[in-house]
Amino acid sequence: MNVVDIIRKKRDGEALSREETEFWVSGMVGGSVPDYQVSALLMAFFLRGMTDEETAVLTDVMAHSGTTFTADDLGGFTVDKHSTGGVGDTTTLVLIPLLASAGLTVGKLSGRALGHTGGTIDKLESIPGFRTDLSRAEFLDLVRRTGLALADHTADMVPADRILYELRDVTATVDSLPLIVASIMSKKIAGGARGIVIDVKTGAGAFLPKLEDSRRLARSLVSIGTQLGRKMSALITDMSQPLGRMVGNALEVREAVDTLSGRGPEDLATLCCALGAELVVFAGKATTPQAAAQEMDRLLRNGRALETFRDLIVHQGGNPQILEDLSLLPRARREIAVAAGASGTVARLDALAVGRAANLLGAGRYTKEDTIDPAVGVELRKKVGESVEQGAPLAVLHVNREDHVAEAERMVAGAYTIDPSGAPHEPPPLIVERVTASQVPPRDAPENG
Ligand code: URA
Ligand code: CA
Image (cartoon, rainbow, N blue to C red):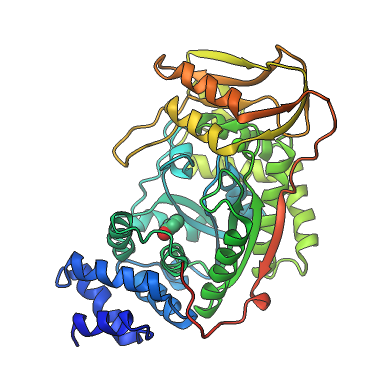
């Protein structure tokens, strides 16, 4: 087999076979297929599209390009959740202990922040002592013994995705639907979970802001995961405004603790229960998502989910006293209120602008090498639909360094649209659509763009 023939075949619009896919992916990871040939292939995939079968095969081959976890390794049926990335999206911190408290087994590998969206690993590391760099043996031991572990992706997993992502970034081929799906799902498949729910964000702060794009992504993720033998569903959820009221690492741990104590923001709690319900049904512990969501709500209110979070913190070396005393978490030196310029009702709150402001304060990364400041971020005192008096705080910035503060203040103020008439404004619906496997039969025609 020869890579030039594979490129030509794809260039001419034919679908690649499993053997051909295995050949170029293993050549790329092993170093025998150079970047310029992979780049040509990526552009052919982008322009010609890929059939569902072809995408599923690429996903599977990428997943097995490095170390993997199987259901046997993990001790049976485990579940996972993935989000396409949001602003102030504290869901994983709440959902993972919540699922474990419902009797599910969760071994989750998570990522760090990049761009305007946060990463679960950074958030957890704001808990003093908490270790996310677990060895494979430590991770598996925790999952099998306690039913719950949360760790950083290791460098030896899905190397094909790392190489492809870097090349896509410099060849204008990032926004190809099949390549996005293969990238996301290869990492989920390699993680070994048998039941997976995807939170596909939509709106200004989302990776794909337009609903029709979010819907195509959700349907394709569910279809490809199902073809690879996973129980799959997706919720398309609102990211036009940030989730909850906290945006920033330690701030979001505070919000997660509040939510696990039954007194968190309603949108965050509702989303966690809805996402969790899908997985509880997959695990056979409830028959309908409605019944499962009710049970999740109960576990948030009766303290069981919080106790499970305490266990997770203890098992991974963190200080569980943060649960009683949130002042043990990193705190910023200064709090600066962003005041409303006029009285009225909040009509819009732009998640992207809030995410960018939090980044300016040091809560996120612009490049992989940047370090984050766990203490800083943005606390939203007002969200869409709430009324505000002129001069009252819309938001509070948690600040350590003084550079960029004025710019962050302007950005947060500009993120708000206030309707001075005081007319009511409904917040956008939180859960826009649910996509299940029965809604997405495999297609034969190639899909691209
Ligand atoms: N997230 C991923 O992991 N990969 C993509 O290609 C896009 C979003
Ligand atoms: Ca939040």
